[in-house]
Length: 138
Image (tube, rainbow, N blue to C red; front, side, top):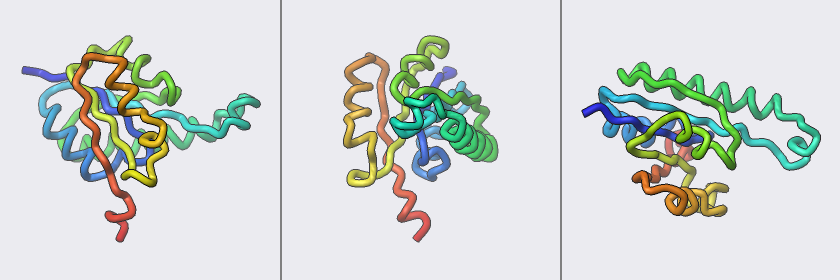
């Protein structure tokens, strides 16, 4: 059965834990990776989103490259961090969602309850993958 997996990830998009989770769940299926364009409130207020979008596109490109190297065909999009999941689900009928974050204490998304809010917004199964980039670099 071909599965459709939506991946929401920012800085952790190329993390080994995330790549393993995607490979395990989406082999032979479709994958859509959404990298939110994160910006400061001040830059957003003045509509200065180019740098945030450019950085998100770079992270997304790296993630897609790593997935392709692992034999998984995926496509990607850059989205608004608040609406990324909802926007993606509007056009991509996912069977599962994977949200990747930094570990507790380093994850702004965990502090803001992004994973819990996402679970409250949909009946689609959500897997939370924690990627510790500091551990990998060490």
